[in-house]
Length: 94
Picture (cartoon, rainbow, N blue to C red):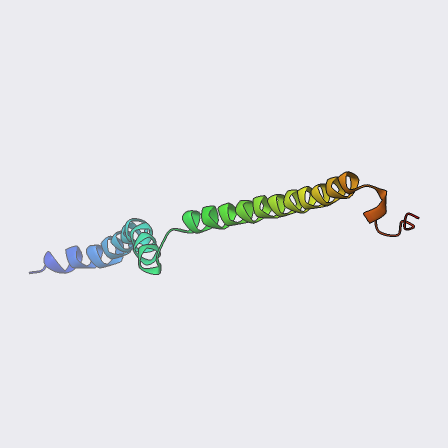
């Protein structure tokens, strides 16, 4: 019984803090992964999706500007084919 008190004292003074530090380093990443899974995804996946959406938006803007240029070119071609009489601001032919 007398030997048990110093052993318990050493256990509580050294053993408990060491086990708590070890548990912190082991459980903290595990808990971080679990909370990320509960929230619906990892931070890296969310950032990757944001980047993909930004690239898609940029691609869409590029296509819209190209489409506007094609429409303008087609209108210009039609005006050229119609001749000078139908050009806006052109004097009517007599």
